[in-house]
Amino acid sequence: MTSRKYGLPCAWYYHPDRDITVRWGRPDGYFTVHTGKQHGTRDDHALIDTVRVSKAWNDDGDVARKAHEWARANPTAP
Image 1 (tube, one colour):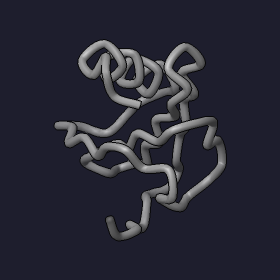
Image 2: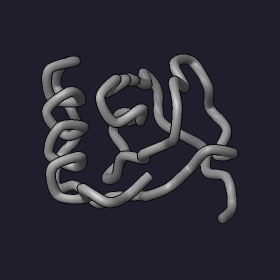
Image 3: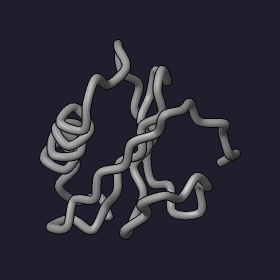
Image 4: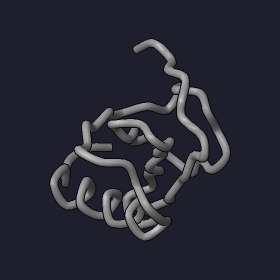
């Protein structure tokens, strides 16, 4: 998968139970899911999914909710 240029500001949320990080740049129409704790990274070496969204995040709570929703919807993903 090719690297993308992410919007700024960029938010990260680490989901410890699943060992994944959701990264979401504003005003990007997608967020990315990565294996492991990837806070502050902007490369795609641990990318496992790219998910389209209809609107940008407003706060860190939006990013955390998307991480939890993705984890519930993808129980067998790494």
